[in-house]
Length: 402
Image (cartoon, rainbow, N blue to C red; front, side, top):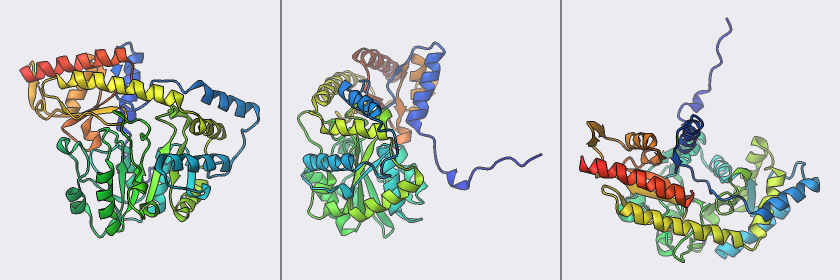
């Protein structure tokens, strides 16, 4: 008998994506006939704007279906440099831009280019579940100083100082945040940046949600908060969230030319160029007038308001209204350990499993480094959000009354 194939040990610490696994489970349950409101995945429920699709169809007709430069077309990199300049006030050249197959790919490239085995990377909790695994894949050690609901889930200066060691090489900062929707205000970002600059730590700034901001606010880029931060920041962005283009898989990295060049060399060998047609669609997106973006952003803000209002009336649920992105991260520590009909709920995972049985799917906070919280995505229809929050309210009413 032939020997069975064996997986490499480097895969041992890598976890499956929690949110994608839950989304897949909900799809299977729906296919079997179960009615479930899916509030797990961070995916716009809007279609990609028609004019962006038109640009892609025109590119196909024009025969733009061949390899491009491995780092992205010069036209798209030039447009992305101008896009970053408009958003941040910082000038970038096309040589300081890398186009990748989604912002997750850009994050992977950045970590592979920067991290040596054993380097520590600060990944503040709560965090997007992919961050720690991306660090591990680069041979790094993720370190998780935690924010709290009282700090709006944000990293504070004292907590950051306590997490820094001689091995700290980089920090991943996500603002607006997945899962909390928190935004580092300019003064907060500048204080953290000052600490990181003195410690010679590179900032990997995941700014993918920076166009989805509410209450008239803005999201500042870490590269712009202090003189000199541009040279020590790799800014990650893309078209997936704000432009409703998750499946098109186009992300950007902006940073010092030598780091971007190294990331580009890695990408050239690992994947080659991003999809040529998707690049043409992304070019149309970031050079458009933004009308559809504002329509979607305004719709998310109305949904946020409705869901926050509903959840604040639920016993056992505590939350801060998100300032951006399309998630609500709520703490349920008061409800942990309570029972319904003799069934005790000691973990948020158990709560999430019960809620699926009742017809609504959320993501337990364990995957985000916050075992007393849950995430709800309000990138869903008004009707689904109304039904879903109603199911959540009835569950916690029973739990807190038990």
